[in-house]
Image (cartoon, rainbow, N blue to C red; front, top):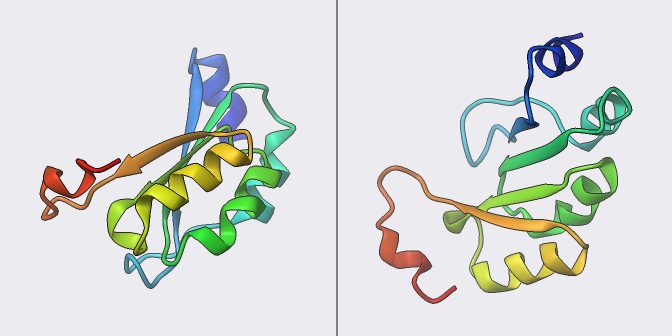
Length: 109
């Protein structure tokens, strides 16, 4: 219902915060929930993965219907490989930083 409400309100896309209880202390939802709500709208799904490691789950989130997959620079050892894996799945890739992480960690990507 919430997805349909924000779409009716004029949202251009839906941002989904995915938390695993390890990388961040909260737990939200995973690919099955995203897949279940995917048929409610054709709006862009922007999936922000606050999970570690993220790489093992990229295909599951892509298959669930995420259009943009954002990973944290701190969530794995090879950010460049994670971003390429997302692109190889046909999705747009994004990077997020924890507040205490300096911007310099993403200079090489």
